[in-house]
Figure: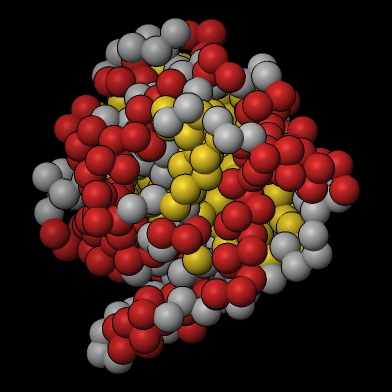
Length: 383
């Protein structure tokens, strides 16, 4: 077999090859959902994705006999470097991600190239795979390859786990998503908690107001950065990133699927829910042109779908160890559940990802009788 060469991506031709190789390597996986190509290019491009404003990034492309056979990114998030080491990130921590490889020789060469680049930038340890930000697609899928991912969730070749672990990588943290049939009502205990909250005049569960998008986004980011600040792997979400994410996800945002909880008029919790855009994207093969955009536009106007994904929720830190935290969560879930069924035809929910040791969220997921359906691992290694 010919030797593998790994080179830094330089120029438009290399970048196109970097994007395209993922489609070729995954085309025979029936559960891989090809992302919209324009979204991938935007993710990778400084000046478009604000992650690049606080990060150093290098892309690498592997070739054999001149043919692209793999790719990897290496990145250093300056905001992550400033976090306390006991929370996972911290000084000297770099990442790699966007990993695709045709075989184990390619994987070995790509990982070595990413590690060498990180060492050259002064990094002493690596957490991976993370593509590109911890807020995007963290971790390698190690359980759940038998069904397609929901919107903005990763899906990886099952062989990658052994290839990565053979390079002396050890699990640092496991991330779970939970699957839930939303058609039956919740258990009686949960219904009693919800009913008590509905009778409490201090509590108000309201939908987001998309007419006041900037105000609502600021509320969500304020709660998010407070609620998640002690979590493993936390990196602050910047105002610019919030605006970018809001603009990017605006077509999926429905007022009746996204809730803010107020206590005495103060916003103290939120829950975001998206219709699973991967269902129509899968049908058009990730290609908007020449005709895929017509199908996507029709779907976005009336997003009927089987699955709803809850990507983010948070309760302000000062309430997290109280009964109120779970009560607000159950109330928001119930509002969203009823709307998802009656207005969008949904029958299934997916919650996550959730850190394996996030006891509060795991308890909520268990109480509503959901089951872990996908597991991702973030690996660590000293450089």
